[in-house]
Amino acid sequence: MTRLFNDPAAFADEALEGFTAAHRRWVRPVTGGVVRATATPAGQVAVVIGGGSGHYPAFSGLVGRGLAHGAAVGNVFASPSARQIHSVATAAHAGGGVLLMYGNYAGDVLHFGQAAERLATDGVETRTFAVADDISSAGPEESAKRRGIAGDLPVFKAAAAAAEQGLSLEEVLRVAERAGARTRSFGIAFSGCTLPGAGHPLFTVPEARMAVGLGIHGEPGIGEEALPTADEAARLLVETLLKELPEDVADPAGQRAAVILNGLGSVKYEELFVVYRRVAALLGDAGVEIVDPEVGELVTSFDMAGISLTLTWLDDRLEELWRAPADTPAYRKGALDAAEPDPDRASATAAAQDTAVPAAPVVPAASDASRGAAGTVLAALDAVARVVDAHADELGRIDAVAGDGDHGIGMRRGSTAAHRAAADAHGLGAGAGTVLTRAADAWADKAGGTSGALWGTILRSLGTALGDRDAPDAARVAEGVTEASAAVRRLGGAEVGDKTMVDVLVPFADALAAATAEGLSLADAWDRAATTATAAAAGTADLLPRRGRARPHAEKSLGTPDAGAHSLALITRALHGVLLDHH
Image (tube, helix red, strand yellow):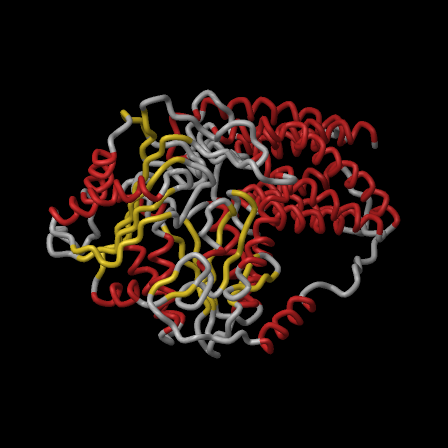
């Protein structure tokens, strides 16, 4: 378990602070993550990677020459926010465009996509690529739905080495696509990981058993089998991966492969070597030539006791890129000439980061009526933060049944930040709309993950509907909730029945609109809609998830409500109390 921490909510930030202090030769901190401390040639494509904390050396440890130009680092097991990614990419950009790379998880897809749009608005040519190498998380016919696990490393490295060679952004993207299409991973675990401050692991494995087909966010395995010997584990890993070859590889015999035997946190190096000796022999028996194998902790999951095997099937070009030198805090290969820091670039980046933040906290003009309504909005956000804090452990427990267990942590960070930002805006005389939009930005930025993006969207939709001119009435609030429902579906792609927060948000919005249309007061209409939300959240226990990290573990989630749906229902009920008090 994770024993050394201060405030669990500050763990990711403090870990990044210590990492940068320890590795100043390679990296320097910027808002949202780290970038190279050494100069990047003008016009070179910047490869910016990222994801949640808890996976070291991914992602910050892979920043340096020959590998990533920057890494955006999110909260524990949560994607970095669009603002963080945009900040890191802006600092890393050297004039040749930016390739954003990440594991294929819903929150990362949302936030990196939003960051790409912001960069494009800034005039920075940007592309995105999601690594999807985990064969246990979806079948070959749905390979685009697969998770990104330890295959991140060879795909990141191929793209970064291509960028070092001076290729264009489109050419670097094609290299990433080629490497991704030829990379497969599969893992097993013997115990789950424990998040900082948690009293128990995200999942447990019965004695003398192992979980098969696990993720890197504490997700439970797809199935269970008897605990193997080291040789039996090696055989399972190799035989599973050899069953699925890339489309243009008919037979493993005569093929070359980059091989990674990855420890997930608690399996020690000697154990990995015992397994690898058999992995190497089995691949040799199959006629596979192993190229520059890596054995060690490369993409971890805190203290999870588990291992994964990754094969990247090489052609001449991919082998050249895999063998290319790299020099990062956690991954080094070959030899590179000494590089000097670029103080001019560091100063320019710092200045650009400073100018990205307004010099003074100015808020738009607002009417007296809207400023009065902003007081109710602030009270509502305080109620949201309090109910989330009271139920954070419960939300994490529900989420851990088939997901990664971080929903409570993320909701607590997001709601706390939203309330703080709202209080600051309210103190400056902001109207209701501005208070909500400031809260929306803070929630998305601090929470990260899918829920951070979606709650940011909800609050922003409400803020747009309420505005800063008039006192909002019941109809306008209902209109804002309806738009929030539509915006969440557009952004996340989920619909009713997918076992997500949408299963609560849609019926809640519909019930609120119907009740206000009947002429009920906002408090009474909200009461009716909140009752509908509570019932809808309970109903998600009978659904099988079709989206998100819980999808590969659909059967495990039966009988348990969706964490996002449950938290939304709790919030709607808590807000009814605020409306009664401010009626």
